[in-house]
Image (cartoon, helix red, strand yellow):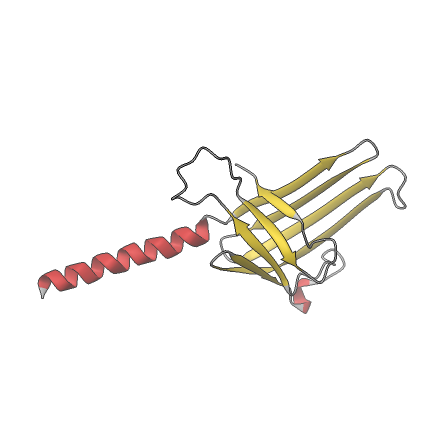
Length: 145
């Protein structure tokens, strides 16, 4: 009986560390930067450990009207296996945070711990579903802090 109790406690500790580790590996800053001859683009997504997120989109087009464009979003996120779902409530939207991330989903990409090859797979989020047309297909790579 004593061994069974010790075994169960050990299993609970291992399971809780596994679950905590899985959600912590995604927390951080993700970016897409592009610099061209006639403009720049920078998109930054911050996933916080408390389940909240912040997104900033900055565009600079030499011939654009307006020349500089900046938009923001905030809300909550949750991870289910490799899918990250984003949501925004009406309270998250204001004059500064105009992008609505409701119904937005991304695939979490990371190198499997079982992959022993020397391939370089960067941790990233690949967006595949959104009501914001320019977000679908966007890939943001995790920034190493």
